[in-house]
Image 1 (cartoon, rainbow, N blue to C red):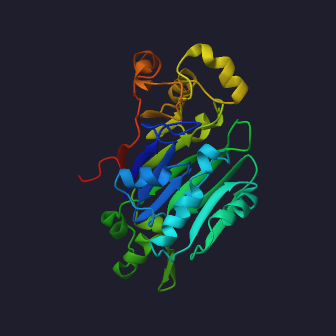
Image 2 (image 1 turned 60 degrees about the vertical axis):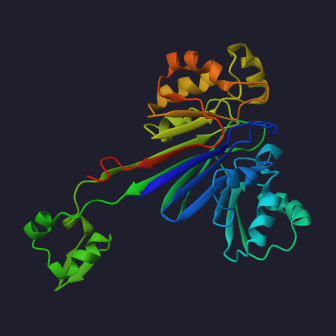
Image 3 (image 1 turned 90 degrees about the horizontal axis):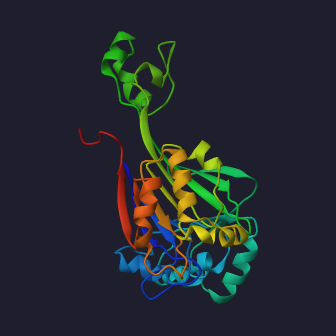
Length: 306
């Protein structure tokens, strides 16, 4: 079990010749999920060696075109690849209305599209074992940040099972998390499982002012992908006005969250080379990476492979 991550694009507002719009691909246990789909996202998917056909879940942070304009093309490409399995798309309230427009240009989609609208300050749901929390962001339109958690199963403890006189016949079912009645006695998974083990946590939050809730829910994340719209501190007024964040603000938040690593995304088109801000940001938060498109990482459970 692991989370395989690729930041397909890192740009905000418009795609550039050397920078696709921000979009994230997350893969785990045979599943593929896409966060946001701006213009050109499907090209980035192919450029970095992935397939559009395998995407079964799409999360939209909000409906601005730099996060959604690639959807009709992506869905049509999936249709041309003879996909038949359903695709589930999550997004803020108004998602159904947005898709009325998408269906007008992306006709003849042979697979079912399930639309799930998120409403309120936060929502929790699960996609094939991956727990997802949506947190309402501080943007000019309804927008959500997403926190992903992949839990780790507890190890089977044979000595504990024997010490508690648990019949060997029920070990397998208990290990899978089931409570079992056998010979008039009730046995629970706690009778045979060891200590809980640390899982994996990924935070993706862009198009927002600094979100204090991330300190509560995103603390100690393995990776925080946050907004790097502006690198110059004097752009703070613009950030406030347009409801975005500066790199400095995101780095301060990462420090408060005590995350293991920070990546920036959603660079303004006016930033020609995001790397020029690396030295300054490292003084705030040393574990920062200034990614370009296609930045990849595999998050693995601690001590996996021992």
